Amino acid sequence: MRVRTTLISVGCLIAIVSAGGCTDSTGGVATPGDGGPTSEQPPGSEDPSGSPDNPEPTVEIPARPKDLALDGVKPCSLFTQAQLTQLKITDPPAPKTSEGYFTAPGCDLEIATVDSFRSYEVLTVTQEGIGPWLSGKRNVEAKLSEVSGYPAATYWLRGAEGTKAQDCATAVDVADGQQLMVTADNDVERTYTLDQLCQMAADAAGLAMQTLQTLK
Image (cartoon, rainbow, N blue to C red):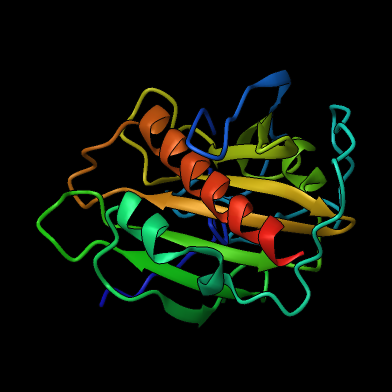
């Protein structure tokens, strides 16, 4: 089983449409300010230098339909067997604790076949909402999006546009100061484009939201 050093998903990155989770870009792109690391690593895995802990978003985040608090929710429980099959996950979901920008419960969903797409990472973050991703103060490019009727931030490492990126993340605003974060991780050969990774992250986030709503 592959061990990830991460974020984005704890995070990394933009979102589009899916069964159970449709992501539409709205508002403007939050462009990071000067400074901060530019090496290729999962967006958000670093503590952004020179910025507040909770920078304000530069776009207005719409109201969520209702709160879906993540307290006590195990990330690996957010996918049914049918959903894992839909995502082509072959390994059993692997619980973990993230060791990046956030300390949060996580789950790795890995594809053990020769398929070039490697994995998803899912985090249930209860220390921070999606606003800081949309502040322009972090080492990411981000867009306000939507997953299953909930506002979300889709983001990726600054400078990854037009390339075969490392990963892309979708963070869903599920409750005050909380976010459900799903990252789609590229393979070693970078087979998938940024847009494809963002779509994958959005699709997986939509499935997780379907399950989360049944638990609340």
